Length: 355
Picture 1 (cartoon, rainbow, N blue to C red):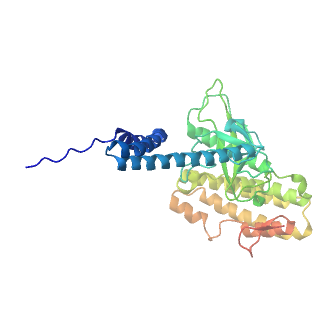
Picture 2: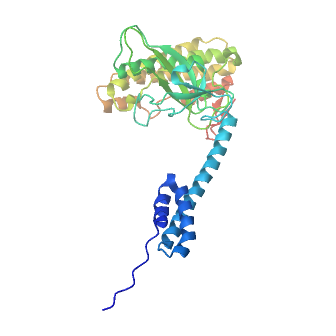
Picture 3: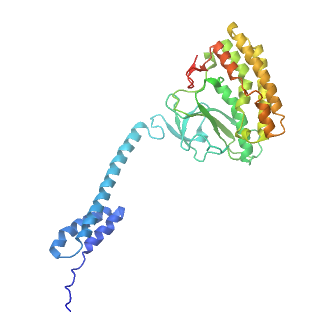
């Protein structure tokens, strides 16, 4: 039996070329070794041309992609720098944290505006923000700040969150008395998770967050823009509006929270009805619609008072929605229209407002 001729040795350069090309950080060296191997193999008769070709191809591809990424990344960095950088790409933005925010500040948060759906009082984990001029597009604006009550220690996050919720609602009506005129917004806040009795940050920051689009103006309202009748109307409606906005996420599931809210609604509605009847400066054309609204609020107050005493959730639902019409939006629409305040255009049905 004959013995076959021995195979020529394998090119070490070819093997090294392929191995190094597969290691991204060493791909340039793999490319070089692959080219050297391809040049030498025809002269030394060694095997491995295929390995050298593969090493050269892989190394070249990795080097080309890396160069492309560097070029694109550099261009994006230049653009980011020219525009001022950051989340909104504006020269006028200023990096900061949630604790730097003051009432009236417009900003963009790094970690999102609102708690995840279904999670109440979830604190924001990323405090980074960019403070933005309010005449530039911005996702949110602080409408008020306040300090947690007392000097005692508060270690229960739920207790802090409850005090936060209670304190933010009145501040909203100081900032924007006509909540009907606000665009589509959500309400959120940032508060200390716990505070000691000897110090620590006790400041709560309450803000409005855009649910669609980015406002390019401050949402703060100027009472000087309203006439005497409009101001009297908005002042009278404040107790009812504050009660409505005081509903927590637990109202839909917790009977105690629901009945407490119903009691606030009853009191707020009755107070607003009283103030509407006493309001000065209303034009004659608005007297009828405003009186109709006051009557409706009084009727609703009785319904809400009854619901606040319900012994079960099923009974609460039954009492709350006696006639299938549990709010005064129709009467409020007519009153606002008569007063010249903006209302939603019912014909358009898309949330647009008319004055």
